[in-house]
Image (cartoon, rainbow, N blue to C red; front, side, top):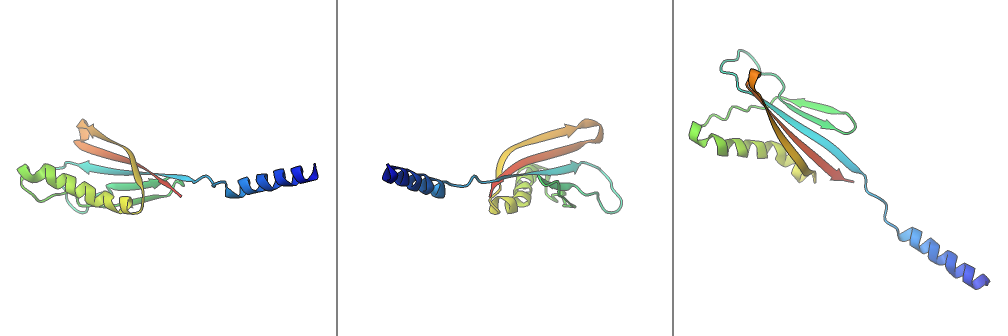
Length: 119
């Protein structure tokens, strides 16, 4: 009987020792605000916001003026967005979903990207 209990305890200890710890999932939102203003004097407002689940927020000013011909704008816009998001992909953040909102009265587009990362 003692041998049976010892074997049972040894197996139980072995199973708990090899059990994987659950990874923590971190969350982050990247928001890019693109105001289509015909004329602006001075420096633009912060238009890129990175918010993590620990409520830390980083604000950046990124130049969204593509300086390209109208026919080349869609492809240039995609390249610019990928250039902004690439550092997060390289840091193992995974895109969960994205959304685009157009605000007509201010002629503004708001792009939101939701990322997760396993640690």
